[in-house]
Length: 438
Ligand code: XLS
Ligand code: CA
Ligand code: CA
Image 1: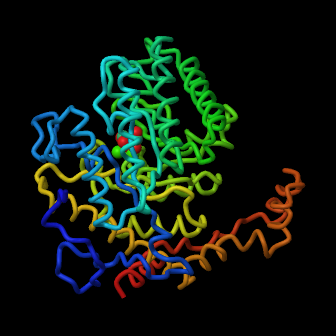
Image 2: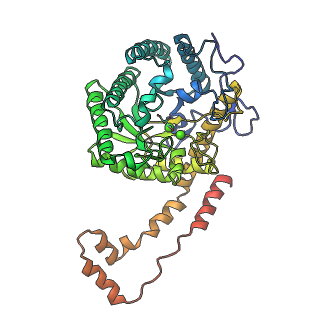
Image 3: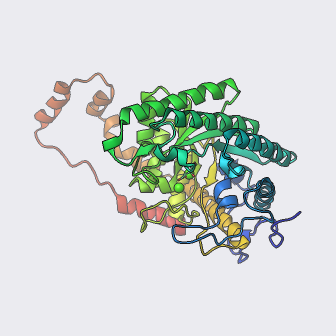
């Protein structure tokens, strides 16, 4: 049974098209830098926002109808969401989905009943996957909504809560393997603190690492060959969250010997909440060999919270794709962890939001490849550090066998230091503009 009756299959019509239900830039088969757009951009649908979120906020009830013809809170509804999700992905040409355990079934009081429902629904998802090329990008456990996680999951003060978190991770890993997922995400929902007056920070962080180590050992045992991801976020819901940003999360992974099994899942809105640009957190991950996957959304710089908007900002998407191309692509994908604004509550809005997001990233890919092929920016950066390559002094410093006395004597012999050369920011920004709009 067709659910989105008035929505056709979405096709590429080119930038001059005025059809709201067509791609203007995302042309799946177009080849950019030797690869098809669809290979550069493995897009994913986030089950929670697209199939579950109805637009509730702190001041009002839901406005979007996500019942898909079934009664909410039932297994029939869970199945209707699967039907809706697969029709939605097929119509847009999206090949991946991401899920939390409790997005795909209504959670029961007893975890054993929830697990039974999870087995049933994933059998149904597997059935739907057959004969399509739709796959799971990553799975995760929701360890933040249930009241038991009020003080965190791995970081909870309660050993019993830790055990329930472990049980959820175990099950979510099994489901991810069952659905052929490329990755498994830990977003530290409530892994943080409200006040240090009641918190043993070291103990909590050690326990989070314990949970992750157990997950790695179990995942490898049951045949999970993909990457584990940490998705950094600095705050919200907790005042302070332990995985503040990429640099903090990478430091944590290295300190606990987890860096071989984990990479980063970088969300744009979380990077900006941390006071960084999206590009910054992508670069930090990439230079550490840990750029795994991306939650493709954007925040509102005028608001201090996690708005999870569909990506619209082409500058940001371009700089994201510049990082991704330079890093040689992602082992993960681009998950639209984004929701329609509350007043955009129709079915057409759901599709138009994805078209916007996919077109924004397609434009970002096209423009990033043009920046790289143009070469002026990369050449400028190379020249900027050339004193380390072209001078005896520079070579000595980077040979790593110089002493402080030797290097200092260069300065004292010379007496006065020359200026280090212009940073040319405005000139470089003008190059970017001419590539974007020229
Ligand atoms: C919430 C996070 C969450 C993760 C998965 O802010 O973005 O949705 O992506 O748990
Ligand atoms: Ca978010
Ligand atoms: Ca996210």
